[in-house]
Structures are given as structure tokens and as C-alpha cells.
Amino acid sequence: MNHIPAIKAVMTAFPYSIDISAPVSEALAYMDEHDMRPLPVTRNDKLVGMLTQRDIKLFLALAAMDRDLDSISVSEIHMDDPYIVDLETRLDIVLLEMVDRHTGSVLVTRHGRLAGVFTTTDACRSFAEHLREQFSPPGGDEAA
Image (cartoon, rainbow, N blue to C red; front, side, top):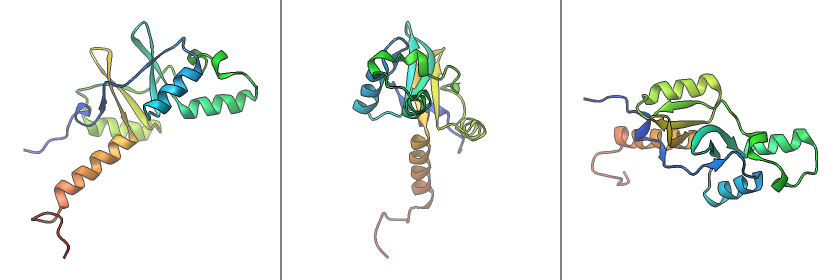
């Protein structure tokens, strides 16, 4: 029987995170090194928010200052109310809520602790795989 999967089936598991007191320069280095857009933010290993490259760029543009990235803390920029779901939450519920919130990423928890991240990239990948399963020609990828 087909059923709607939980978010845990399509999320990126065990994401990196950054401490809220870290400098923005360190956050950008993490994002670059691990090719991440959303970066979960923690305090004493407890999830407290999320930081994106867009947040950083917007902060720097609006602040119109020449501060060194080492002097700006993640705490000054991070989003402290991101969309957070439990890893057992159904995927359709998460997707519709992402649309309603106009957000491109979700933090996924297990018993309140960070377990994964789900982004629009994960959604597109999952949907493409679903389409291939549903509509691939019988017998493989042979040309007609």
C-alpha cells in the first residue's frame, strides 16, 4: 500500500551546526566547506535557530557598515523562529507549511534534538525520484 512518507525519508540527516556565539566568518566557512545554505544554530548543543547566506547578505546590506565578519556574531543575524518539525511529520504537511511560510528550509528534530535539515533542493530531488519511479518506461532507459 502506498503512503505519504515522513520527512525523515527525504531529509538531509546529521547536518552541521554552529554555535550562536561563533563569528559570522566561521559560519560562512562552514557553509562554503559543506555546501550548505541553511545552517542550524545551537547554544550548548540545543537548537536555537537557523542562519542562511541570504540572512548574512541582507544584514550586511542593511547595516551598510564596514564591520569585519569576525566581529559580527551569529547571534546578531540568526533567525530565532525557524520552521521546526519532528522527523515523523508527514512530508505533505511539511511541504504545504513551507509554502504557507514562504520558507525554503526546515529543521528536523528527534526528541527536540537536531536530526536533519530539509530544503527545497531535497524536495526537488525527492519529487524527481518519485516521477522516475512512476513514469519510467518499462525495461529501462532505452531510446525509442
